Length: 133
Length: 317
Image (cartoon, rainbow over all chains, first blue to last red):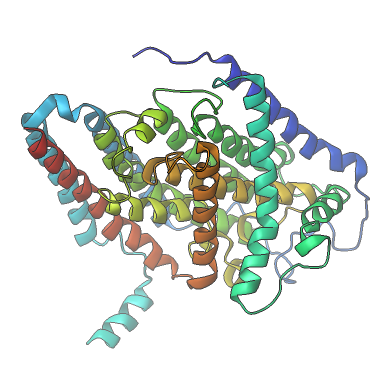
């Protein structure tokens, strides 16, 4: 399939967007007032004096989710390719994609079973199992 | 009128910005009505001039860059969300002959740009050097990429029925029946994914006021805060327009109204639905949000693909 329209409207549109964003970022610099108070240079943390900066270590759960995203999104791309061509590939392609999707679901079930998708803290898990039993 | 004429290019840019700015008033007014109060009603007829007043005010606010933040990235972060959502509109088929470009991969372009806007949130929270902002941006990153996975998959049912990624062909394929009927599972999952991608209530945990004060845009003020704000309404408009294109027949409708008016009418209804969801539903807990995405929505979208494939293939032969 060939490109159906020319690209130049997109380029003009993008340039116009850049101008709009540039004005929005630049204009208040000229118009706005300036003020400096005692605590202006402190990060606002609900009135508590900040301790340390934010270059800290955070929960490994966030990294796990990023890895899952890469894996599952990559497999989703294969499904995108199948979705446009599935009429041509017919039942043979369908059976192959069934196998593929079931491998995906099996991987998801495995992640579920080892508890990688469980975001509750240990304490929340204990409390909830007490409520359920 | 042809797609991509100068009138189209500037007209679309102007109207989407106007609509998104107006949505600030629409949302406050509607939530006011649903909560048994009036909402902003002082300035102009029905309070409509509130938008203009807010804009003048926000332009004259101090342009404050905190000395503890990373200056260049602090500037770029709000620009990213504006650029990503505004350029998302180029592929929307507003009506025959109205649109900026006509891509064969229109849907993929939309998905790519909607995932690009997560950078804005992550960078804003990370460079602000503020613990609440950092927590908000981490939450936003994990939430967005989790819901991203099945957002793409949820619209693949539509692609299978239409046989194309081209949004104009998808609209044309809905002449007989709108895809919201055969793809009801796709519609539900896409709606939920869209709300999560926009970080709107009930999935607004990255900026949950009770826990994180303002979340990722904590240190932002003045117009840079306004850009996050308008960016949110821009993505509401974009996602509503996309839902109309994919599931509600785009510009198609009985002939007593012109196609463009049908498109605008349907998009407004979807936007009002998003606002109603915000005012009606409570916010879930963070672990519930994550496990809902991975354990419920992802299997549902995968099964939806299989069912759609089997149904189409068995009617074809």
